[in-house]
Structure formats: C-alpha cells, structure tokens
Length: 248
Image (cartoon, rainbow, N blue to C red; front, side, top):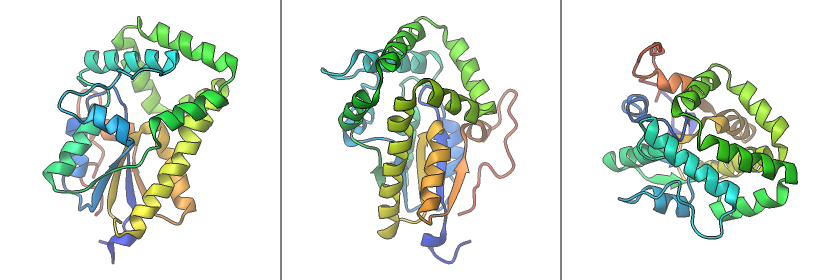
C-alpha cells in the first residue's frame, strides 16, 4: 500500500486496437483501487467510438486518403480478429469506468490537429509508403496480421525502431509528440488529486509515455500488451504471476 494516492504509480496498459482484450482488461483492472481511468482518445473520437453505434474506422469528410485506408484496415481487422469494433479496448475501459462510477479522462490530442501536424511533417516518400501499406493491408488475411501482433509482443522495440527508420516524421508526431502531450495531461490530473490512474493506450506508446512521466517525477507501472494478453491465460500464454492484481 502507498501512504497516499499521489504516491501510487500511474498504471499504463498497452493495448492493440484490433484485438479483443475485454477479459484481460477486466482481470487487470478488477481488483485495483482507482481514482479514474484515462484512455488514448480525444473528444471527437470518443463520440464516434463510445456511442451506441460506434463509427470507428469511418473517418469523416476531408480526411487524407492514407488515414481513410488505415481506418478501413483497422475496422476490417477488428471484425475479423474477434474485437468486433476497432478500438473495442477503449469501449471496455469506458464500460469499466461507468460500472465502477469512475471518471473517464480523454488524454489524447484532438485528431484533426494531429492530422495537420502529421501532414506537415511527412515527406513525399512517407505518404506514398503509407498509402501503399494501407492498400496492401486491405487484402492481407487477418491471420497474418495476428501473427505479426504475436511477433510484436515478443520484441516491441524492434518494431518501433523499424517504424522510426521508415517513417521518422510519423513516429515523431504520432508517438513522441503525443506521448509528451498525454504525459502533461496526466500530470495535471495528478495535481487535481487523481493519483491512482489506469491509462489504456496503444502498446507502442507505453515505453515513451512511461519515460515522459518519469521525467516529470511521476512513478509508473506498466502492463505491456504481451503481459495483458496473458492476464487470463489462454493457448500458449501463461498468465504472469500477479497480472490480475497489480499493487494498489
């Protein structure tokens, strides 16, 4: 136990937006004392995703072609890989917050501002590669993508390093800048008394966001995607000791 809620570490949970993680999330969050839950969403995406008829993967007018392609890809993979809706893990986090009467905090940058920064930062090569990758992803079988997610959980740093080499502008805007901005919002929540926070973000954000929080003097506990997926056991995955009950 901690002397006060502000001494408790922030719990960062790494997720995948196209994988059904409801049971693991409930196993990890169920026994933990919390002041609130934060998610990697902004107000616009939260309205679309957390409504009774979510529209994740269906970007509105004026969104660049490569973003539309990646949105369609996430939607298809979410359906084929058992998540039902891309971003189902965010819906689960929101449901848990409602069930436990906890505040739900949206800590991501506004999506349209992020897209504007992204477009300004990307080289022509990066744009072409992203469009090509999106088109290719629309025809790749979901089982191949699931194998890639399994491989990612074995060595996440390798995939993030490859992203930085292939898409430096994308990595800077979508990972580094957003990590810093989310860390600032979490620090502000902590000053308001919300010390015992669980934060659900895409797994690639976990290392950078954890480092950003530590630089601000905030203790952090992490549950990476590979650990989360083992939190309730499953074929080929042994539940880590204590995964279901992180310290409060």
